[in-house]
Image 1 (cartoon, rainbow, N blue to C red):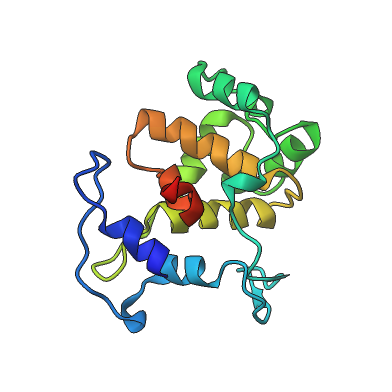
Image 2: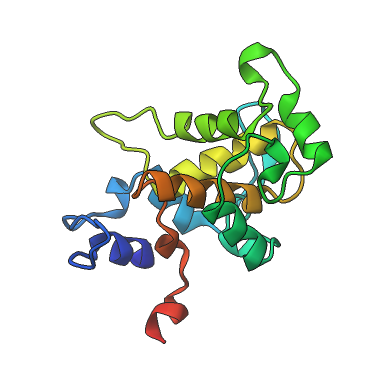
Length: 183
């Protein structure tokens, strides 16, 4: 929790971080609770379709097994629309994403980016969907679609690509370890 609050309180770094007032544990939003519970051995919880998952699961950019060159080629390159251009999506994942009713079928990169952006909300006066919660929502949506491997790579690739188009959507600094900050 301290790490999350420290990262959120940073200001003047040119990255658009807002200064937060002192908050208690009761004031933390769902994003902070996700961060606080990460890697704890807590009871099972359920996804929207009632599949169980441990709190250790979820988006972690360090779990991406896509090599840096492949990731950077995707981020810097033009989008063709072919869903398999997204690092981590092969023919099997493409088939799973295409399954479903008309509005749930994702058949190209543009639609996948659109789904990522749809999960940025809904916002309310009490809660704004910030970067960490947004990525968690996309990771679990991919899980619900049946994507069983490379979910973190897919989230990272789409988040970085969209952040290049819409700066501020994704903040990779939120996932740095405290040891990394001290170096």
